[in-house]
Length: 508
Image (cartoon, rainbow, N blue to C red; front, side):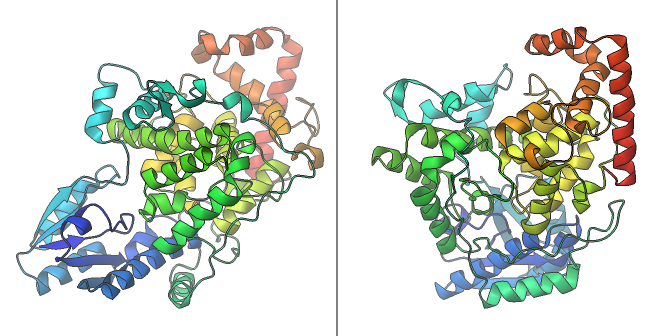
């Protein structure tokens, strides 16, 4: 039997590698993976470099490793079974919908067999989630409290530590002008990572062929992400020691030129298996117990990992394949060109898109309240924006982006979102400094230089009135809709059409 370790399951101390310490290990580096989507070059460098470092670490520990560098996974499996006929592979259950069936088909075509074991990179098993969700609706807050009770994290007997389940009211502050976040860690590429980055550049050319505009990602900044277990632990240490304390109050804030703020930047390591959620959570809780980080910051971070990440993983598992193509609002606009080029005068969108182009990353509020919010108001087809997120972000996998973008960002399915996360310029202005340097006027809804967020916000509410007016969570919004007269609505409609024309022409 051989343990097949796939590129996003680089876990050594649990799962099939830990349970079968003497078995041969197979890793397949398939060039075709890099051509499935127009991936950011840092995403490809991250995955392939992490795989090669994982291979080397296993060999240093005396494990026999077959590392197949091939064009397709089928080629790699064929080569493996040619060398080891009639052998059985054991691998972890994939997260991506249809992944198990594809693996079974590939292995069968290569003349072998495969066994699956549970994916232990998460805190909540499928059976545990299914029992919780049986007969009910998905409600993240209820699931989060369930997981707190199940794990005992931040619990004092049967009650939450501090007396509150969450501290959102303390975690929506904007930092003072003289505040400076701790510099995020950067891991200088070693010989292996440098070789991978050069291979990615020459092999894939950073291009995004297949999207309507051609071209390539921006000349990215130097690669900075952890690619080994040791580096990932150092990244966790850096976050807990230098940024966790201020993560909470400023987690929703945005600032021009400050791409990392006080965020953990641990999602790449978690999604590859270089870090496990329990160790990340327990390290943050220890900082609170030692007096090194306040409860509101630690609880907010724990909620992201124990609550949101686990919740989305299972929503994806249960709601696919319908979730990927869900479009309950009938949005049919194409993704505007500036998502790929960054060429827009809108200060918030320009800065956030440039950050994705340069380093394959932006933090969660920029993803939800700038990128997804614009797509929602504009009426972008959810699958198009999901594809862009999946291609552009270093931490993106289909199970990650689909519920976040299609459901949370674009209200595509209504499986857990109880209302659309739609906002005018007010939110961006409150939580950032973008509006102060933007040529569009944050206070204007109609006329020349009116902020597109304002125009499209009201146009969105009017356009979808039949769907939303009866939603009790949107009553206040529609009371303001009712305050507007026909003349104002005509002006909004005219400006919305102008905004769309400008976006189509690349002039927004």
